[in-house]
Length: 254
Image (cartoon, rainbow, N blue to C red; front, side, top):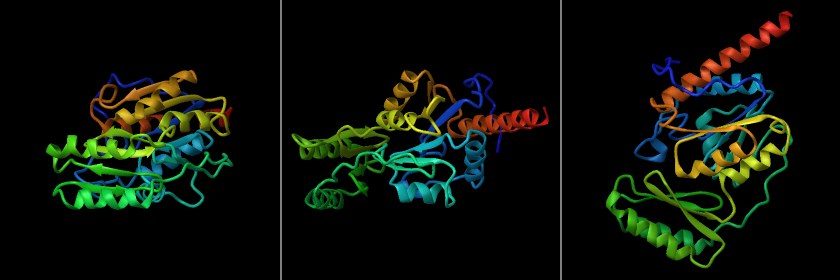
């Protein structure tokens, strides 16, 4: 991977760390459409290296649906890292972490109304998930207020909330966020007892950063701490993997 040009990136953690990584905008660049992202071919290898060096304490904490996140990261089976998908609503791990309490999804009628709303407005895109859905307006930024108001009116008085995201608004269950997912994982192996590091780029990542700090760790935001964006994050993670592997060799030789 290309090395970062910046020298003021966060300090590299040691092997007692637990990594919680957002995906879009953090590990990969944002694209005009969710299905148009480009994933660096060596990213799955890097994630695997980190998971091995940290005894599995690596999680992708993403707003993506679980099956999409697995496909985009080239996740093997069994996968050495954990997924907290749909902003922490869905948890998938090979390490025996118990699943999160399962919320109810929105009524089918809501999904149909959202689809009709998007179809009638060029530039809007509906992304469906298991427990919610997203209206993307990157191609029609003038629709942002209208789309957000539509979802908020729908969710009013219900068990759902509307969360702003990158050029999008998402309807999802109340109480499901990246912070609650980090809290849950930190109670169980292989994350328990480690020092969490959360890296993200969006308002939806702030809950995860707060949770990491509450557990004695750190939360870093892109681009504030990684000026070069995902390229810097991947370079930083590559340096971390190399350091952890070198330390393991040194300890083994001793």
